[in-house]
Image 1 (cartoon, rainbow, N blue to C red):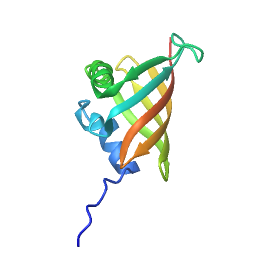
Image 2 (image 1 turned 120 degrees about the vertical axis):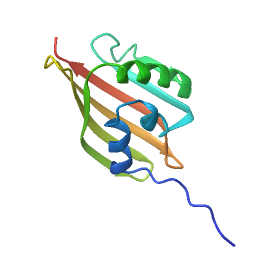
Image 3 (image 1 turned 180 degrees about the horizontal axis):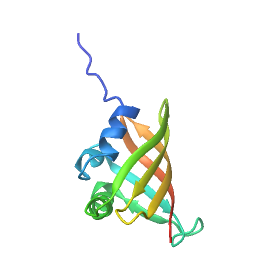
Length: 121
């Protein structure tokens, strides 16, 4: 009897997704029913922006990855069905964005994400 192996979520997988030139590798890490909550200057903790499902998350990530900017995974910790990471981004004019995320994982896929982000103004 053979058992199917479950996908493994790890730092290298996340790095390849985040640092890619398009959103496709990163989107492959999300479950169909994933939820993303974003907290920043415009969407504060009491009223975060909430995206439901891969389609809504993909629309946002497609927009982000269409911009001329770099994405770098600064740090990542994976423990069981949770992961946390820090991502830094930079536009060609030097404007920087920093985000911290906490993930909930199921079967190697992201099912929940809380992202807190800040950028230069």
